[in-house]
Image 1 (cartoon, rainbow, N blue to C red):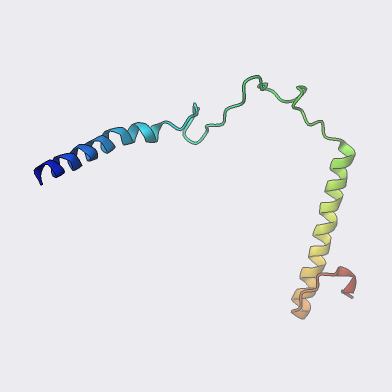
Image 2: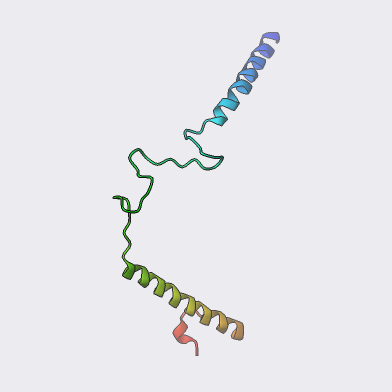
Amino acid sequence: MKTMLTGLMAAAALVVTSAPAALAYDGTKCKAPGVCWEAKPGYPEKVAGSKYDPKHDPKELQKQGDSMKSAEERNKKRAEHFKKTGKWVYDVSKIQ
């Protein structure tokens, strides 16, 4: 019984002494707590003008903006119709 108790105490001591070290290292070098993103080797500090720059086309960005505006307008019509009638109509063309 005494050897079993000693073995358990030794195992507990091992867990207690190794736990802080295991919890402290997460495999990254953090600048601040929670800010642990690291770029891969060779990734530039500034993306603009590098090979990683996405170079978005202004025309495509405008299309996305227009699409979002029209979606907001449709949702506004749906919400107004719902407030008036209490029924949700997905197809805006069916709203008078």
